[in-house]
Length: 317
Image (cartoon, rainbow, N blue to C red):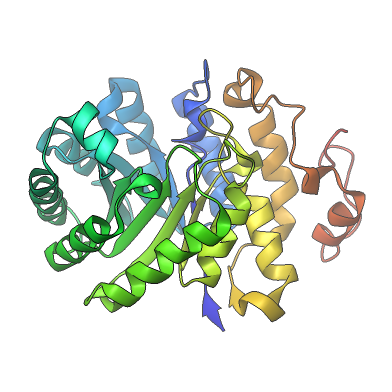
């Protein structure tokens, strides 16, 4: 059975909830919980954003041994080098670099032509490869990008050394059939697609983050970027617990395994729900657990291998 990689970005995108922030100690505590859950990749932060975020990423990199620790970086040398420095002591580190690829973002935000964006993306991946062999490239706002240009830039960054290609629905604009078509087309049309893992990162502005992610998995994506409790910018991200349990429950449809220890989902949810990122979020307050986590049937199933859940572990409804 094939593996679906779970990439958790609670510590990075989750912290982008309006008004939210986490201390270094809180990030390390949540990272250790994610490691116990057997999350494959933990995106610990955006090292260039502030000295505090740099130190938090470095602390997570030192503390986590069994998961890959990832740092986010724009397609700029200073960002990439800062991420590389933060991850130097990681047992396994990944640099995740990104640049916008939609016409509106290239024109209005970057003020760059498509060929310039492609060149910058290739340079960024090559720069990141100086620090680690594990480089992920994201085409920001891919959900509104032109497919032909996505194919061009994807082929180029894979050739430059990117191992993972992330296709984000940055503004939560796509619907499942449309998003699945994009993923399927990239895998079919990009000549060197077999040299990289395709990933998705979906936002929940239309309530479709999980649906879009699962549609992409059926179309060939083999990494999903998600967060505990669906925490994240604006309306949030795809929730880790819903992705994992959908794939586990419907093995007949997905034919995939995640490797996640599902007995750790409820404790992780409770830990994140009490963090400042949840308490301060108007879209994901601490009381707003995903429906799955308030379902008594799920709680019983999640704990079936370790006995009856205690009151401290069961989510409050």
